Image (spheres, rainbow, N blue to C red):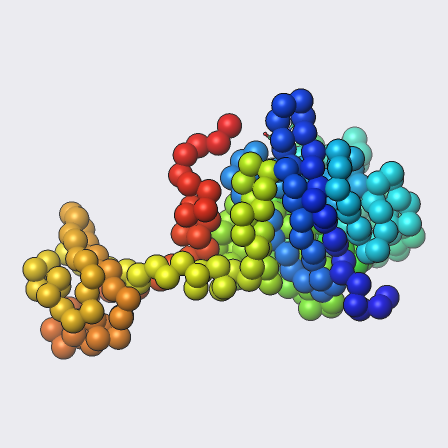
Length: 303
Ligand SMILES: Nc1ncnc2c1ncn2[C@@H]1O[C@H](COP(=O)(O)OP(=O)(O)OP(=O)(O)O)[C@@H](O)[C@H]1O
Ligand SMILES: [Mg+2]
């Protein structure tokens, strides 16, 4: 390994289904060791893009390099080095959770003990002997993540790994992913949890209608918003008119439960509120990746 070579290079990749341009000229590079997120509304083209990189779909045009190799036509050299978790997980029929993992692992010469370790890692140790079709949605998802990781690949692709997970499993998976990343592995993943992408990803690509609309570290995207800070208080702690008149306040409005103040200079506003003893129920919200996402992709439903 050179360390210089990017893990993934995507150059002007296109893929249409009939008239529909599912991926319409996508380009990006993922560095080795990077945690890269692909975000976008339903139908944006995330899964299609991932599956083209993984070598599961053939692009109409454009170029893909995965660890310096072309993933299409199916490249067996890449298989031991990549781990793939698909959006719709599929397993071998009638096997238990542990047997699934052992079967996947044995394809790569992984010891049986590793299968047990992986079950432990995703919190499924007590389901080892359960048949796959008797696992819950979130448990199946965790099993498919374990299958993607069992052979210790250099690049891991995860398509909405946290979609069906409960809050505990989601946080635990964050720790698993961070640990993988800390060992120098590359992670490319999709999610609809923007709070999660904001804390996990080194960079995110925001996609819509087959195109990349933005690509940067989450903090850079959020900073670029120049959004005001919203300070929310319990209704009644301060009259709206008085709040509006405070130094630094751009706007103040009240609903049934709260008073919300918008400001780009939170420091004087907060000290004025403190002087008036008006901090009850205080919440401060700054711009988030979700604001960036909705600003770029709009609010209307997608097919
Ligand atoms: N095999 C296929 N045949 C025809 N159209 C397809 C096929 N696969 C995907 N599409 C279409 O391509 C577009 C992109 O789909 P894709 O699965 O890449 O979206 P996505 O961003 O992963 O969405 P989601 O967030 O819902 O998973 C969608 O409009 C979808 O209907
Ligand atoms: Mg998808």
